[in-house]
Image 1: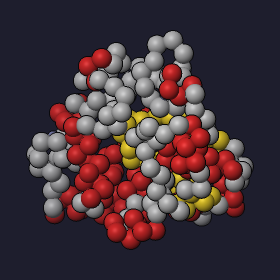
Image 2: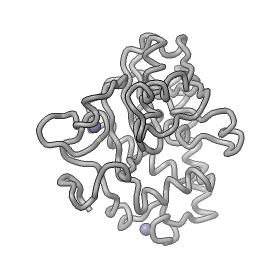
Image 3: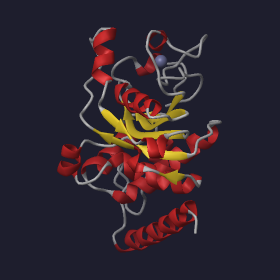
Image 4: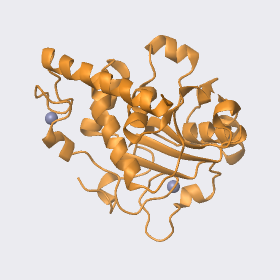
Length: 254
Ligand SMILES: [Zn+2]
Ligand SMILES: [Zn+2]
């Protein structure tokens, strides 16, 4: 049996298990608390999506060029970035549940949002890789929230899930306030890639939240260093603290 088929069967069993669990212990919507819904329709409709013309590297609204002013001066190892929605409201609550409350059930609906996003982009890739946590963080938390999104996403897309393509050696700090040389230093050697897995592959790299993009850049550059052909970066949410006033953005539907 091939790897993708085996993955799909495991995912179906996983979903079946969760359907029974939902019946025994009905989930509550992280937005409004209504019982019986992973994320209710009304809260889902309030998710602030990233739509319209966006910078290909950070998702910021752009009008003329497809690269924003900030990204024009940076190096990018990934081909393109897309995020599903802004890190606010129900999406933020859902990620906090996924991250800190060990809510595996919620990952199913979040992965389906990511599936919609990937399908709407014309990205060609072979494997799905989550951004790993460092060993210390993994021990503290017990699981990696990016894996919990990436694994069901790979099954939904019919792609091979490869969590071992990257190992995280250390955390990457925020890039804010650093000059270019310091920024390059900050993202260097934070991950170790596995050439046996990554070499010659086009990769979908998945994380939960895009904050400055430093972590994605660091992980993508390592994958390219060990021979990946291309890396696409995907997150469920994008933090907008750094750069924008939400009311001023022309491409946001609230
Ligand atoms: Zn709700
Ligand atoms: Zn940008």
